[in-house]
Length: 499
Image (cartoon, rainbow, N blue to C red; front, top):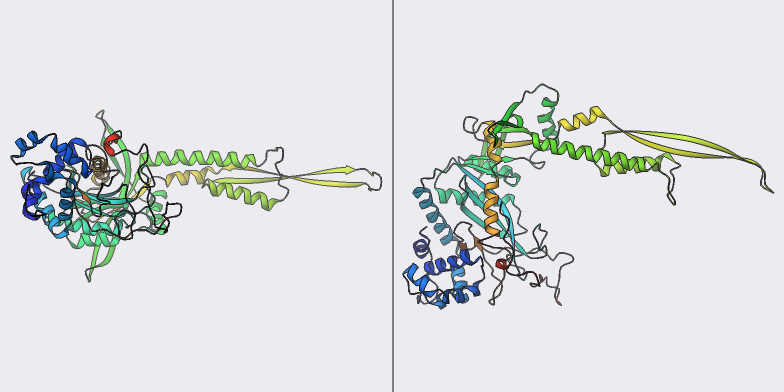
């Protein structure tokens, strides 16, 4: 890999130059990280002390346990925190991979993930607290953006920012770093909707690169989406059938779609840019079937809830006026999102009852009103709604001869490649999460690169304001909880499922 000479070339060795160089210290550290699946600094020195003969024989260096003490490793991290030196190293490290393996870069994939750790949240720290899907949910976290080479999944650039940073502005700096590392233009960048900002697509167009990403409501207003789907619903727009080869060797129908051109204008670096973007309007068969099942389940639940309004029960009030009953029905339709799909029928029965005179009470007639409601499925409306399920719109500036409609759909389904890199980053053997600080206190900079386990820097960001329900100290400072029983270091946990 050539990690050691490149690190020594681009980074000065901290301290007085005694002992191993920064490159060799990093190589020994990475060996520990990959073999032990433990990123804690204070665990490296005792590990190396037990393997001095092996380390000295394999490196050809006079390895001493103090070369990889936690103080020395912290100094290495501080040296790696120079962004200018790191970006130069990153580019020099990527180029030999492309030459040695004769890789012809054509596609890059971008995506983000989060990583948590046991850190104290500070005003200028890199680890804020916030909502997250991982477990446990109350740890501070950072956001990691990966740029990987397709289809190998080789990480080319990595950015680490505080969790509260938005995803959209991260794409342009990552693309710029990929251009410096790879040294080529004309690549196809594939991402999810977070890469769909107009500024990002215009930046790629201006730089001679191509993009492919889905558009969501922020980039595609509802009236534009309606204009794309309406020609298909009315039968005026023919669709192309998209298939792929299944495991049994048969062709499997996976989607239908068509494409159209949209003129766009944007300003890039003070220059007005105009271009025509291809919009790929695609209906996924699997997504449409899943949406239909969910819709029919909601219809059944809504009908059952409406019918329950008619049932009598002890202590259950009856509807005697129409407006309250209509409000209850409307609330049910809104809850299950089936407005306009059920025809609601109201019935009213009037019962009269004669009461004879009793004592001083005169004879009278008592009138009782009994309201009922019934929900019937509006089949034409449901059929129209089902026809609008499963649609997605993708944007690309790649010409059709380079990226046909079918290839664009099939290529986007391979986005799991970058997800696999994230699985290796957060699972074994790297086991980045959860991060556990050593005796020196919280680490303020971190930039993990998946393949090779390199640790580089990124400037710390700004912390989120304290969230309700978090632990605070006496002065009101937000403090994330300390490790508890069952929160052991990553190597004590079951390996993450990276499938």
